[in-house]
Length: 153
Image 1 (tube, rainbow, N blue to C red):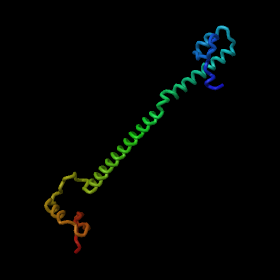
Image 2 (image 1 turned 90 degrees about the vertical axis):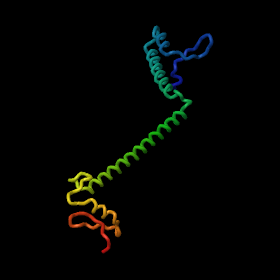
Image 3 (image 1 turned 120 degrees about the vertical axis):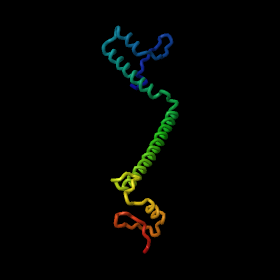
Image 4 (image 1 turned 90 degrees about the horizontal axis):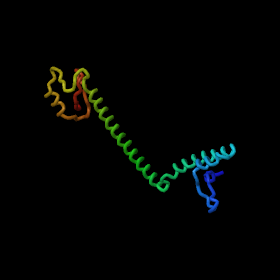
């Protein structure tokens, strides 16, 4: 028996037409003088009808707009993809900032806060060294542990 045939039907004796009826009403009418086997069969028809109608309702709700639903889903996927890409860029930017801070933090002496100048070091001397420029692209380490630019000598 197919699902379509599982629908409870009632034949009108006067018109001979088949019309769909509520299975619960048919069950109520049949209970008065029906056998237990016919009641079980009717109850199974009702169960089939209920599950069939729920499935059909789920499948046919706005069935004409399946294309619209697909388009809506496609737009939602595009938005989610863009959001993920934006978050990836934001994460990459934050990672770059963190790496820059880590690099900056390792170039300074950890015992001194940024902007601290130890006694005996003159800022003018350091700025003059920086303004000279790097002729060779090499750094030379002095006896006190500082790095200075060196030239070919």
